[in-house]
Amino acid sequence: MSISRETCLEALQEAADELGHAPTVDEYKALDRSPSYNTIIARYGTWLNALDYLDADRAPRIRFTETDCIEALQAAAEEIGPDPTMQEYDQADRNPTAETIAKRFDGWSDAKAAAGVTDDATPTPSQ
Image (cartoon, rainbow, N blue to C red; front, side, top):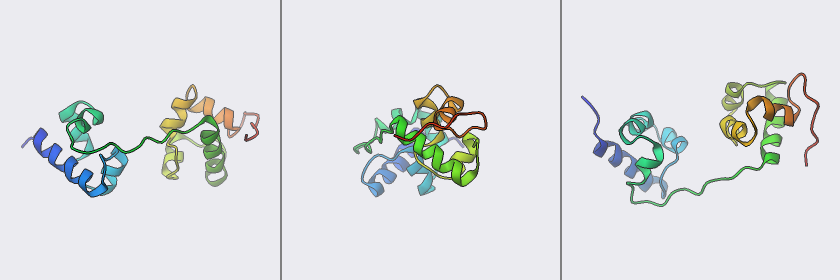
């Protein structure tokens, strides 16, 4: 049986009511609701398209600077070890996410080089 768009919207609205704002994907996942966020995206095309149907304000987006990203990567490397992968970084449950860091630079490798956390990188001083 296929899950309807209406069922997806009802679950999203319940999550929004509980949180007090439209949920981010991570917030929705943390609530462990059904249907899954993947099903919602499949029905609406994107998460943001689904949120357009809600009667709720969107959560404020957090903007991370290059310095924030570098400092987060450096802290993670101290905890995880040098040259962390995106998966290792995300498993450490840090913010910003590895995807955000990679987007802020020209990819994960460039971000690690800027942070000085690769075996072949020259450390960049924190600002």
